[in-house]
Length: 396
Image 1 (spheres, rainbow, N blue to C red):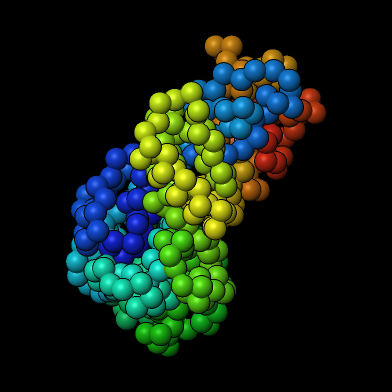
Image 2: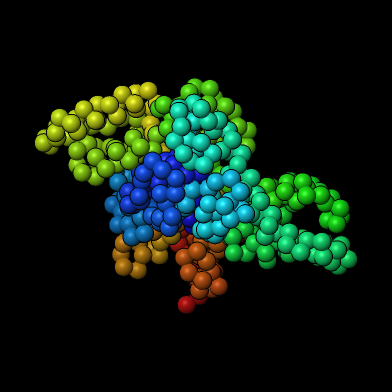
């Protein structure tokens, strides 16, 4: 699963990406710093079951810090998008192509209004960030529309004559974008355009593309540079009805994570404070910088970066964390590792879905599962809960 970090140039995309992943990305105050997509790993937090079972875990595909399981999520930081990108302007074609496999998008918006529509620096408050929300949504909608409705005049006639389900046809067109037939069905239901596709207008086609995008590429807004943003800008962004909007300060988060990695401070991502390592020899310049950062945190609370990542995964995508084991008594795999793996699963997923997630053979040969918390045997249609520890029983 991949989360895309998107936005127009020079709004703090690469800073957000670097802060969330600590991966190297070129950062500069001019448009199109990012040309080739940057890839890295972000982490979402979940309570590790070893706390409830009073044991010690040995994670393999994730990390555990003081009872918090850090579950990895792939991230991609793509080239900045500008108006008319779907027509190839700027690096539009590359941007959109890089986003094909992203399950959700974090849209970095310059809430301070200090970058114009092309990503050039301008005076704080002189650009309306609401325009950026609208244009990026419009560009992605137009991109999807261009894929869906190629040869539409001919195709719509065939659909009406044959009675073929549109979601099936559209799913074939969007298969490379990770958009499923179920997502398309939900978009068709929301758009409610009727059963005569030959009568759909251009506005109808764009509306349908929007609805499909909302289900297939859901988006969260990171209102970045919130520490210098005019209050009116933040207020307008927070009032957007169809989006989760989180004020962020990616620059501060990046500084904190780098200082933590350098053992200058104790900092837990998502916290509203940090502790300076007094025993460390920290320069006066670094101390003054950290004091300034604490003043910013006192003003804004936390930086919002970790919250954005987790809201995208747990709310937008509605995922839960499940822990498969081979021995439900000792919570181990075949090598004796305790609670080795953590898997992100769609809420509503079943025991057999987990089996397929672990390995295709386990899914194909599924017999039953055992809930390690209750010791109860459950069937293939048992709905998983967040934090479940599950043993899969399958034919050899």
